Structure formats: structure tokens, C-alpha cells
Length: 233
Image 1: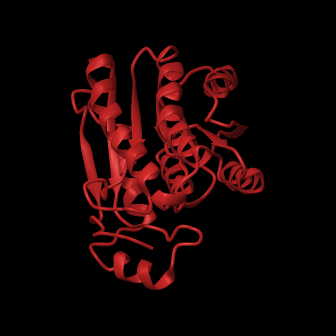
Image 2: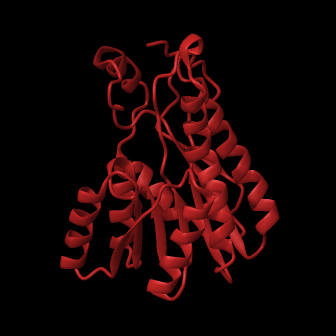
Image 3: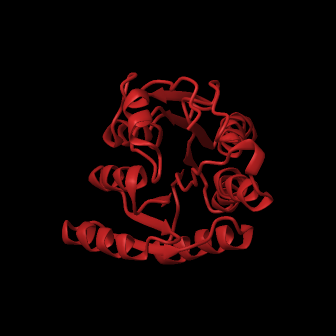
């Protein structure tokens, strides 16, 4: 039984569909994507998948805990957590606000931490898969809060792998450019996308591997696609 945060749209949706195809019962957490979540759940149930959607604002630790409790109450167990929910916004250094900074760290990193904390209380054995970013070692001067949050996700993966071994495996899939973010300049995206590009299905396949791998495989960061160079738009 798998819980996918941000699982109703974009790459998160591809992950949800892939895990469902592998026979997993599925909980999808969403925040602003209620329509997309309902549509996906209907589609999965039509294929015989035991699936449900739960609203949650994962910038709140209390919401993260509630999400996990409701998931376990509904399905009776939790085996896999995929921390896919994230925000990616342009934040030039000189104009980044405290709210923008906090939004990236609160959802992308803090949310993953507290979802993992809550989930492991209900896992006898299990798997956690975080979604990082292949480009964290490159220069993204207009995306500093996002970059910091994903650096934190990679570090969180390694820390939890040690803290939770041997009963829970914790790994990270780090995609390169996959889907153009809303508002990202198209010309720049084309130049970035051309370098070792991957698709949502590639990311979903990597997640599916880590969601079923031997628990001795833990603390790994798997790059899918390629790394973007310096991006300044």
C-alpha cells in the first residue's frame, strides 16, 4: 500500500499510475489539485485499483500527521511513502520574500521530513522514496530557495537511511528536466531540456524500483535524465 504526496498531477501522477499498475493500493495526497485527484481516482478505480485521495497542506506538520493517520485508517496499513509534493518558483535573490523562501523549505523539505516521521510510526517494514533534483550541484541563481530545499532532501535521504535501517529503506530519485514548470521561459526550457532529457515515465520507473527493492538498498541518490547547466531566467 503506497501513499504518494503530490500524486495527482505531473510527475506525481505518473508515479501514482505506475505504482497502481504494479498492483499497489494507492493513497494520493493533494493540496490545490482536487479536480485532478478526483479524476485520477475515478480512472484508477475503473481499472480495479483500490485508490483514495486525501487533501493535505504539507507545509503543516499537523496536516502531514493527519494525512498518514487517515491513510492508515482507510487502508489498514502503509508500506510505501513517496515524497513527491513540491513547489518550484522563480525567486531572484534580490526580490525573494520570506514567504517565498519559507514556502519552498516548508513544503519541499519540512513536509517530506514530517510525512516520513508520521509514516514510519505505522510501518513495521517499508520503503520511503524522496524526489530530489539532478541539478542541485549546478548554479540556479534565480531559484535559490528551491535549490536549498532539494539539497536538503538529498541529505534527509541519507540521514533517514541510517536512522531507519534495517527495517525501512530510504532512497531518492533525482530527475533532470522532465516537465516545463508553469511560467518557465520556453526558449530556455528547450535548451535545458535537450541535455539528457527524461520523461515522467522514467522517473516513475525509478520510483517503482525503490518502492520494491531489497531494503539493503538504501541511502541511494539515483539521477534520472541529466543535469541542467546554469539557469538564470
